[in-house]
Image (cartoon, rainbow, N blue to C red; front, side):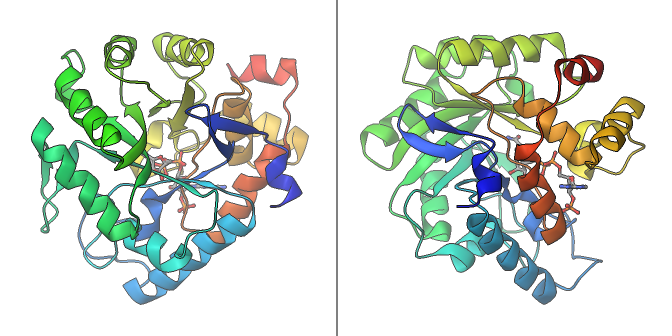
Length: 298
Ligand SMILES: NC(=O)c1ccc[n+]([C@@H]2O[C@H](COP(=O)([O-])OP(=O)(O)OC[C@H]3O[C@@H](n4cnc5c(N)ncnc54)[C@H](OP(=O)(O)O)[C@@H]3O)[C@@H](O)[C@H]2O)c1
């Protein structure tokens, strides 16, 4: 494990699985067209080799928390299969987190699972990853269910946990009300939501509440920000640029450092298919922003 990685500290997911606070998100491994048509960038073969190299390098750099999903696939590449190809037999202590409820059929069309279909989604992850149990499964709440209950779905996952298919459960795209509802059903190890500089007050409050309850908060789009699925690349915030210049860091590193500074229970999962970006993101664990810089950034 690299000293760089160690500097961001670690967290025990679900009170037991130790993970370094800078993890890795697998959504970008299948190319820009992760949810779309054929790549127009590198061919699939080049992308496959590059993504496998990125995954192996991530583990060498001390990443031991990888976020994925069975629905991260493009016409020729699947994130779970890339992880399997790159890392199996899996090193001890590697935590792979996935998410269910959304699914995509072989043509890529989205569908949403009924509670009794969640077992099939869990098994699909097991097959593609080549594992006999999943470390962490997040119930990823559909946008249309933001104000609706989730106990039926979460209860179905809790049964899979009881059956030993899943070790820990989490929530994604969830509200404080969802968290309270889920916790009445089974323990919740993490909440994975969109978060970063400029996050709304309610999300900051949820992050804080997670910390108080010993629940990890796992932000996505911490680098991409408002670019969301389209990624980073929009004009960068002047304040981020100013801090980056002053610290000799990149804007992505400043965004990650700010996010990690929000609490010891915050676990970053920056997504990249670029080896240079991977190295930068891991190195961001060593960047400690001052109180003034944190306040300036929001
Ligand atoms: N639960 C959910 O609903 C949900 C939703 C979205 C994502 N996720 C998970 O969260 C992870 C993180 O989200 P994300 O990948 O969308 O966004 P992100 O980590 O905030 O940013 C990724 C984007 O920034 C670029 N990037 C990464 N590192 C960079 C660097 N050092 N410098 C410049 N650009 C950099 C990436 O492009 P390059 O590939 O070119 O580096 C990509 O476009 C995903 O991979 C996925 O596992 C979960």
